[in-house]
Amino acid sequence: MKTILGMTIAAAAFASFGAAAQQASPVGVWKTIDDASGKPKALIRITDNRGEYRGKIEKLYREPGEDPNPKCEKCEGNLKDQPVLGMTILIGMKQDGDEWNGGKILDPANGKVYNSKMSLAENGKKLNVRGYIGVPMLGRTQTWVREE
Image (cartoon, rainbow, N blue to C red; front, top):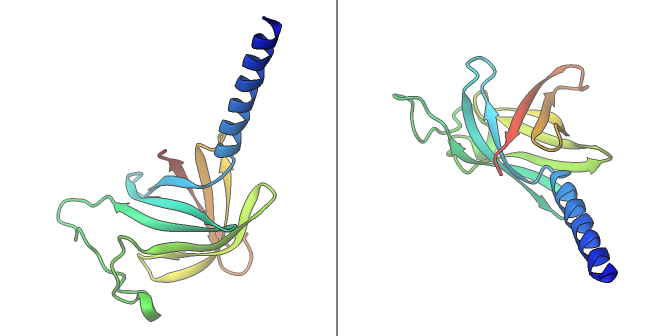
């Protein structure tokens, strides 16, 4: 009986650790929120490819009358006039302790690419994503909400 109880406790502890470890990663789907309106803008799927975290636009929330399939008109290079839906906007992020940094983030609204860093908040339910020029102090942070 003691063996069964011990195995049950060990299994529960292992399951808790697994859930905590999964939440300690930005991998998953995140809802972005418009700073001005407070309305959802997009769903971004963050993936881990051998330690490099990338984010791709999976869904756009569009208002009536807005183009349902916008193109990145202000982007430069090979992203110019490409569909925003399906676009990779977050690249090169690498884990550094409790943060992920060293990457770049694209704002399809203005076509600009910023340095970026991110960190989890509220036990992995929120992701603080900061885009900046030069040093992190000169930037803006958006809070994304986990969907999965």
